[in-house]
Amino acid sequence: MKRHLLLSTRKGLFALQRQGDGDWVLRNHSFRGDNVSLALADARDGSWYAALNLGHFGVKLQRSTDEGASWTELAVPAYPAGELLATGDGKEPVPATLKLLWSLETGGRDQPGRLWAGTIPGGLFRSDDAGQSWQLVRALWDAPGRAQWFGGGYDQPGIHSICVDPRDPRVLRVAISCGGVWQSDDGGESWNLAARGMFAAYMPPELREDPNIQDPHRMVQCPAAPDTLWVQHHNGVFLSRDGARNWSEVAAVTPSVFGFAVAVHPQDPDTAWFVPAVKDECRIPVDARLVVARTRDGGRSFQALAQGLPHPAYDLVYRHGLAISRDGAVLAMASTTGGLWLSEDQGDSWQAVSVNLPPVYAVTFA
Image (cartoon, rainbow, N blue to C red; front, side, top):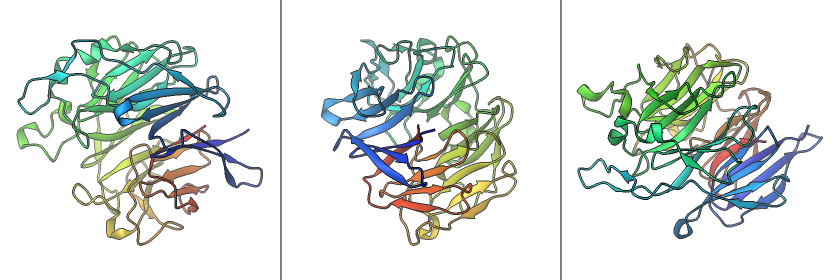
C-alpha cells in the first residue's frame, strides 16, 4: 500500500511518499509559493483536497484525483447575503464573509460526495457533490448561543475540528474557538452544546464554566472507540468517555497543559499525544525543549518524549500539525519553523525528515 504524507505550508502543498526502504521522499510540490492552510485525503475514493488562503484573492479549494499530479478548482463555502456576525466588542454586527477554511472532513462511507467544512467566522458547511457546491448548516449558524462566540487566536470565532462518528455519520461533533463543543445526532438538522465539565480560566468566575465560551484548541476522537474524545483546550486537556456529554480535566500533562495539537491512537483510546508549550504571550516550548507528551493510561500519567527532537528549539506546532496514520504505525509532527519529524515507535524516538520547510500549518496522512 502506498503511503503519502501531505504538508500544508505557507509556500505550497508538499506530498511525501514512503519508499520500499522506509525513506520518505518528495513526490510533488503543488501550489508553489501559495499559502495552503489545510489538506484532506478522502479514503473513500482517493481524492485529495487542498484549502488555500490567498489573502487579497480570497480562499480557494482544489481537488486532485491523481495524487497531486493535477488539480481542479472547486467552489468554496459562501455565506448568504445579509448574514451578520457579532463582533463581541459592543459594536454593530459585520457582514459574515469567508476568512479561512479551518477544517475539512469526509462524511460516512455510505455518503459518497459528502464533505464537511468548518470556517472562520464560525460557520459549518456541507457538500453532497465532492465540493462542487456548499450549503450553510443553518441549525448551527442560527443557534441562539452563536452571538456569544468570539475569536481566540483569530479575531473571529472558527470551527477547527469536525468529528464524524464512524458508527453513524449522522452523529457530528464540532469544536469552536471560542464557542465550545457542539453535537448533532441527526446530520446537522439540530445541535446541542456538549462542553459540560470544561472550564475557562481566562473568564470571570461567573462565566468560567459556561460551555458556550470555552476555547478548545483541537478535538479528536478514537476511530475504534468514538465515544472517547480528547481536547487540547486553551487552559488544559480534557477527556470525554461518553461521546462529549461530559468532560473531565486531565491535569497530569507534563511539562505544560497548554498547547494546540492532539492525536489519539486509532485503536487504543487510552493512548494520546500532545505538544506542550508555554502559554499565551510566550508560545515556545517549555525550557526551549521540544517534547511530545504521551499518555498510555487515559491521562493518569504522561511521559515527555524528546529523543531525536531539537534542543534548544522554538518550534510551535499548530492545531493540525500532529497526526497519526490510520493504522497507528507512524506519527508525524511539523512546526512553524519548518521542522518535520516522524516516529515509528509511538513517540519513543523521532527522526528529522526536514528542518528547512516553510512554516507548516497541517500534516495529513493519505
